[in-house]
Amino acid sequence: MAAEQPQIYELNNGTMVVNISNFGCTITSLSVPDKNGKLADVVLGFDTVEPYVQGAAPYFGCIVGRVANRIKNGKFTLNGTQYSLPINNPPNSLHGGLKGFDKRIWEVAEYIKGNNPSITFKYRSSDGEEGYPGDVSVTATYTLTSSTTMRLDMEAVPESKATPINLAQHTYWNLAGHNSGNILDHTIQIWASDITPVDENLIPTGELKPVKGTLFDFTAEKKVGLSIHEVGLGYDHNYVLSGGEEKSGLKRAAKLKDPSSSRVLHLWTNAPGMQFYTGNYVNGVVGKGGAVYNKHAGLCLETQGFPNAINQPNFPSVVVQPGGKYQQTMLFEFSVE
Image (cartoon, rainbow, N blue to C red):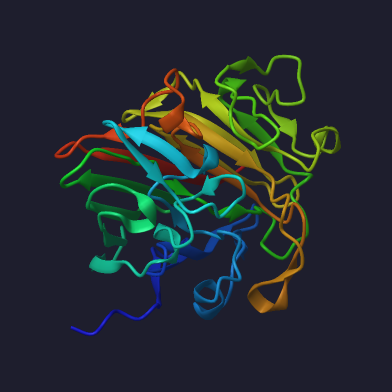
């Protein structure tokens, strides 16, 4: 069978339209209505698959794995064996290495149209791929569950060896529209009372730091840009999610709002952490319709296991045993208010 080509598939329920590629399970566009019913595409990205394949995207819209975020010095030990990973973000390994899940062509296992359209992608990660142990079967399903809600279900099953698994969805959001400028006027609320502070190499120290009264406090809705210039390049921090309210086993992670369009995104997840990243390294990327994306053009809400958890015994474990299952669900609820 010929290898599948990178292409883009549409999910359209008559209200919202989402385009997703089998290259990296990447959301290339997502259009939802504003307060006047006007659609705008609220994710950063490219018009075609070519720039993604050529590596022009700083993880726009993709699923990252086998292990999202940073692993200290690209090394970990599991069951007495030391593993070495590519150092693609010196001195660390980031988002699965040089050719992570975001740079692989996934198989389209199912594609359903209609009122609740969905698409299921499958990928088999082989033993030793990017330095990781054991074969792993991965599936990701995007479903439009209501007129303005999208659900993502991610599963991964190790076949032969224990392995760390930590997947994350890396979409850059700009609820005013992907080509509208920066996200500093958005407000955000994050259901987290702590972050995991990092050292000079962006690796968590292992402690939990309360956000109360600090620049990192988004327990109440607050403007993203309010104190961002006092945080170095911007936010790029893992929040310890503590959202009490549950909806079908998911807890609240964040509420993002753009005042100009009144668009709101409520994000729910069953993951323990969320990397809040304000696009600090985006610089002059030419995207859809010739739009130029610069610093803070979008922000990421990457629900995840904690960074470097494989080397940090007091963090929730990201190790999955053979026959066990990694599972993460994200619910993206769009509205206006």
